Image 1 (tube, rainbow, N blue to C red):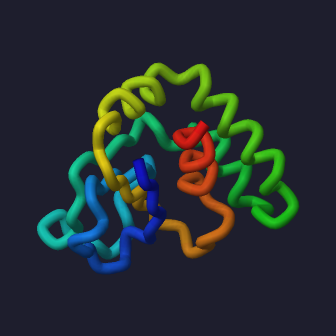
Image 2 (image 1 turned 90 degrees about the horizontal axis):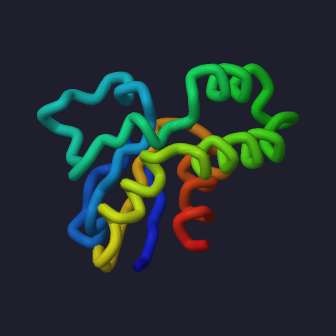
Length: 115
């Protein structure tokens, strides 16, 4: 399976494959009619507490966020459900809404899905 990462605000493309929105909150400013996704998996997103903690100082907390979010995912039944749902999909695009393309939950989730 090829996994891509894309901001929710970028236009959808025919080569995106199966599009999974992975944030707990709806992307600000996008309408339900224009945002294309195949599933919105709120349960795979970082917990509210972890997300708020990370956003208070993302530069200093990135490595710790990666570890904490990975721990959350490994104990989250939704992670196993998502892996089963994605099995057999040739291309999957993880959609996130953060401005930071290098430090977000999609980056961590991609690594774990590839393991």
